Image 1 (tube, helix red, strand yellow):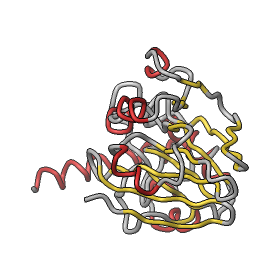
Image 2 (cartoon, rainbow, N blue to C red):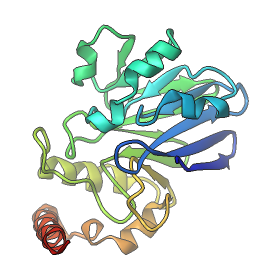
Image 3 (cartoon, rainbow, N blue to C red):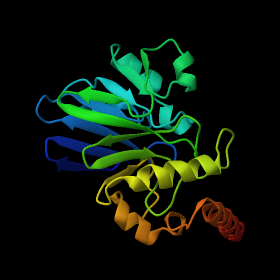
Image 4 (cartoon, rainbow, N blue to C red):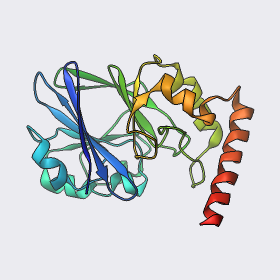
Length: 228
């Protein structure tokens, strides 16, 4: 069963739903002044989110096009025929005959009275985008609670991930709250400063050190898998 977590931040609210392929999150972001809303990632069936929506969502914001994050795209389009799908210009979704709106780095999306900033963060995947609204950031699989995303699939790049994490996300105010794409950490959300304290991968001295830490992480991960 999905877990719904409801939090209000000033003039907007975030509802978090856990389920999908592997403890995936989908989110409803709502402007409380206009009640306009968007969904972040189509990881969970729209029927599960629908009872918690005050109005039809205007768009689905895609953090990246790995299957588990776009699994229910067609479901959302069928349920809400006018809904827009927003993501990176190079995403494979841009080739589909859907109402797709490509957004570049540092674009601004307005939902009601909310202004959402897009941050292009390649590394885990080539079309990864994070979405920043006031003091929270939806990071998809670029950054989790306790670690970064992995770079083991085609179109992943560890150097790109280093630049995205260290030169973009970690440059944000330290009290920015992370909303990741999966529930992999000790709690659903935390601030950037809190996350740095608990994550070895966020304490690298530079690119080379980060790459070495990522290699060590994968080795340890494999050792644990072999013991199961």
